[in-house]
Image (cartoon, rainbow, N blue to C red; front, side, top):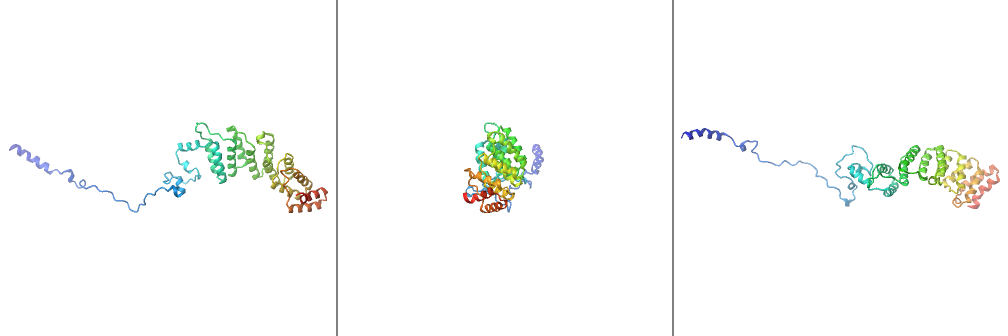
Length: 311
């Protein structure tokens, strides 16, 4: 009985302790969170069969461009890992880049050409060797710079850098520089470059386009004697005059009353197969005849009449 009496207080104490499940904040049943309202569903990626231009891009756009406009053809690659970029450049060789640049020239993607070339020459090929362009590929790079309004000085600097790739500029390389000089009317520099081309190797000898660029520039800057000198030189070397240069020559000689020189040039053109198709227009012939009557030069009159008789 004494033992039973001692256990009663303990029993009352145990009965007074609550079970853990009897607390209010723990006895609640688990409930699912309420679904948010007015949340648009996640868009599906575009169907490649639909022809969507978005299919070529990362449709989720996980990387933002931070407001910087990237070229169309390089935006995906600039957001890609470095390894992917290296793999892309390793996939191009000189031949594939020439074909790619030929396509881009038709769409005038000059900025893309310039950027891809500069990345490519700083990359390694699949054998771990630095990429090296040939002279034709480098000329595409020069043309891209010219079409992006590079100055003649800038192009000359780029031509000088061809030696870093063990390349020697050819006639096409220098003609691109002459085009920049023509646009800026840098006649003195153009004549010096033409003279340099004449004394260098055969790979960079001036051609018909070289003389055409310099002659047209000299006519535009009213340096008649120098222009006529290069025309005579072109005809003597068996070169071909462009129709634009020939018309410039005729108009300038009429205006400056250099009809003896004009008659000589016309006669020389008639004796060469590549230039015999050059002929003054009817209006030019009328102006030549009118100038002849004022000069009273029998040779000039014969020269002005010859287009009507021969051509």
